[in-house]
Length: 522
Image 1: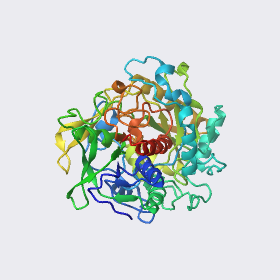
Image 2 (image 1 turned 90 degrees about the vertical axis):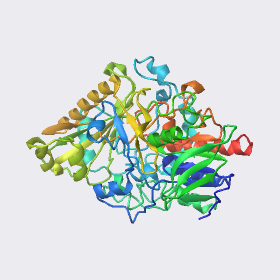
Image 3 (image 1 turned 120 degrees about the vertical axis):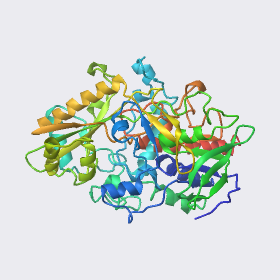
Image 4 (image 1 turned 45 degrees about the horizontal axis):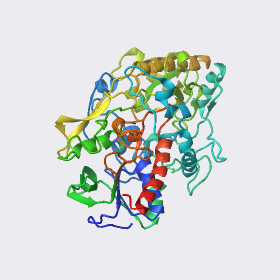
């Protein structure tokens, strides 16, 4: 691996190595641009991943102190764990299930299409689906998304077959094993999926796309790349002219370091990215970097979520095969006759025994809880994921009473469901139960809305500087050489899993950064 001097102010510094940061790094390196990636976590590998839910959680999760507030159940049951954001090379691409869905055209124009919704801070994206279509195509090819580019879909496991049976009886038509960034056949030097069933614990076979073993090794091969692991960034610095000049971080030996930079791209996820901008406040930027609008940290979205599980007379063994093994897309449309704006997906979800015990009904005990756990092999499960409303009050702030191991204020994550979210969740619960009842379920169970893994917003794109944090390219309105390169830049969340769109935006952003550097504009 190439190494760059800490004083080298010609490099692009990227904070985070996940879907946004890892993809951006490779794209820039392929264009001959020098890149230093600072990743707070350690590097794992296919060999070191652990097919055990709790041990893997300790290996991959971001366990640094956080706090929560608001009416969401997470604040009650898991106050220190508002979201599973991975602290490891590859970021959340080690933990995700592989679902790779394009946003729909109307989801880029929610303010126009949905109109005024009380209590929602809706805003049209400054880009359209047409703008992203060529980049979506590049992302799907890069990631090997099934059902695109002639790549066949993955086989359906029993969990999917149960869902398909029930959904078909209800008249649903858009039901299949998904558009998945998991190899259904050998591709890109990686083998096909072995159906091990531990997609959330890191893919030991390497069939699932992850920047850990796709983008980052390719970036390294260019000679333009350096990855520094266990590098925890605490501050972004700037000069008197207001341009960023580098970052301060603690290395793996807990020594403070300073890396100079021509450009800084923040890809720390929708909690840590705004936190870092707020921690970087100065006399010039008293409210934090890129925050003249006051929107840094606001409009936190996590998707409308919930789960439905069903017990059957015969074994299902839902845990055999990919974690997300199928999807019903018919409800993803915008149709206010259902009593809410936006739409949702119904996706199969199989949790291992430890997570099922933790998330089925946190704090639950007694005969009913035992009844469900005893029938674990007979259960089928699905996750509900839909568009939640952006709200200014749902936000990331600095907790002025709690500090982390580096002496910095920890992020507080505040979230309250919007009435639209609740109406959508109730509709989705009902439809999920109807699917399983149609398939012959003897009993169904609605879980609370766990987990929170689709973290978006908090540094949103906007056409006008006063409405958001960055422009259509993820370039902050206030500071031309500071970029947002992760799901924080989402203006709204759509009904779809966000990873494909994060990768798509990173590919597009790399083109823009390269053009701006060539033109000496930044």
